[in-house]
Image 1 (tube, protein in one colour):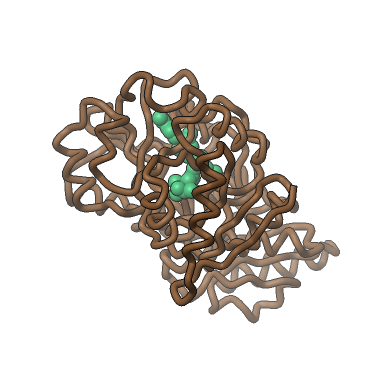
Image 2 (tube, rainbow, N blue to C red):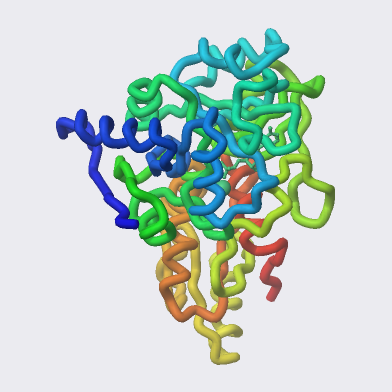
Length: 342
Ligand code: TXA
Ligand code: MG
């Protein structure tokens, strides 16, 4: 299959591109598109065969449920039941945006392979002009996981999607680099209080400022059985082993010296202030102590490491404030919990 990559930036007349995307989707095909978090691979959420194509293209285990994307809030009640007052508040305050809400599923509407074996459905309204234009032109919900091959970091650029899925999908809508850079927060609204199943682009602080105290599952590997099934798979794994390292120039310098003394080549993922410490490859996550910038740049940096001959990757940790919780969750998974100790 030929994979077409078409640009849909704000200054072009994109009507034809959206028509083409809608046509493919209505005929049961898949289309990759940008959201504010990462690129998604969409298929009609009500079409079982179309959804099956997502799992095939990604090589994704079919017991891991997909998020349903909608273009306006009113659609929620078509697919979900028992929508609480807290959920209404969150939808009003945070949608469109990087927050997936898990509801009781209305029976018989969404294709069964979107949420295999689940009585619930995760729904979100993405905050990206291309995603919204596509959803509104289609007028139907899209089931869409991140548009990477299973086990690769989520794509934050159309080129990442192309690299992973070329020949496997017919169309990629290129809307440039995504902004948030880590996936949406998955919040289970069927528990009381609600529970964060995956930290992401909408921070716990923001959610709690709207509905008060919530639960957050400890998702650091090996500590607790995951309830968001996506958490049990190896994700975001780069080719060389990745170690998390303390945010400290001296500590990083000593690590580089001792690794070099062992003849090992090192890729460093770190904020700008650590760019001149002498790593063999250096990939910036932006300005120091800026968790938003780190989130934006993290996945592209990990992918760049895969294009090097590094024997080991060191990634500088962030604090857990705001989107830092999501950054550290993804880094812990990429590192499989490993920290570099001098
Ligand atoms: O930002 C995002 O959420 C991106 C963009 C494309 O929207 N999508 C994304 O999808 O990250 P995916 O499939 O890569 O991750 C979805 C996560 C998985 O961890 C899955 O287990 C969880 O959401 N999930 C989906 N539906 C669920 C449900 N009903 N109950 C519990 N967890 C659910
Ligand atoms: Mg994913």
